[in-house]
Image (tube, rainbow, N blue to C red; front, side, top):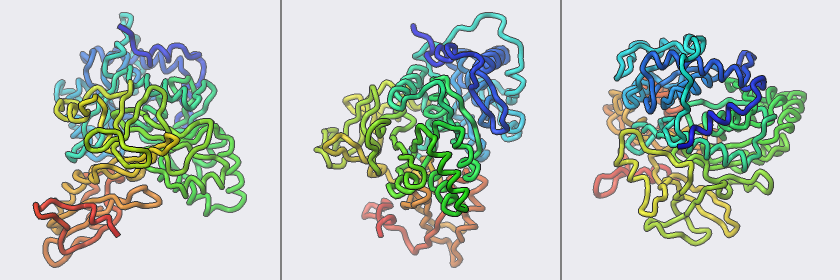
Length: 496
């Protein structure tokens, strides 16, 4: 059996090299990450955390987050990150579904988990700060096997409830190895990190990519002006289209002197990437015009890691997601699973060593995710040109909305809005938007003579949904379009 490539790779980095810079400027070396994450294993072992057991944690981005993640892996557990952005019902869904052996939270975020005991152990959350300051384990640690599950990320599904996607140590290593080759990750890189850490983009592609390379990661909350200034000390920047839109809005509104300083800062980047949603060609061109940087767009998803990328060296095609990454095969097929001719639309189906292990607790959904040839059904529609470059046309299912870098379930949002007393019927659809990629729009049939306002719906839903899931536009209609069988026809709502 082979042991976790991730933990083996971390042990190879110079212990005095800076691994993480927190938002407050505090620096943590690779040696300190190793010591503190190893010390935390004692506390996890005292709570009977062992091989293959889920550990849910809620910690702010920074060194403590990384130490907690590594500690769970060193103890043999499966790390399940929560998001500080999520509401109590969303947090509770993950905790109940994951059935963790224990919960971990930072001092600041512990109140968010108040009373949310682990279903298996019945124990209140452990404090992350205390764990990493504990004594080292009494016995030498055994590294988890590469085939063991390392991570469980929750992503929206067509059922409207987030599903846990289980990823092995080997699958994660395959992702960062592929990206290291394709994007030329190196030890002297400096990543400016502004993405959430409960998604593949921020956690696997960005953070684990940097840790795999032995690079430096600087965490920073997104504020456009501060990010522009911080680019001067970065070599790699990863973002979603919404972030680039907000950067350009700040740039266009800034004085000439600030624009010149910011543009010079961005010109020093070795690599700027975009993912999690389609990058508008006009946005790529405006960023390139301002900074000289051509954003590298790529394509992936939680279940398959990263599959396609524009080239590091070579032309980056606006509006396209490039060709297969090393080790990945992408077929574009019709409904029968047969390859379509170049230029014809079809569903993207993928084979890759980055593949997820299973949907947690849902064998039927796992099996349904693959076709008879063992290819994963992505649910995304695209075309491939004669040169092999792939363009995405959108989701096969209209019930998945890509907004601001997140993949949202329209059904989950609808379920919440339907509880509003003034809502009789509702359909939520993503409408193309220059800033958000897709704007979450609700079509509502009112219950009674007074329809709800957008502000009222947002206020009502805010206690149940994360901010990025709230509707941003409202259309009040007399009825929703349905076919003869009574099935809602959402595509008609998106039509001009």
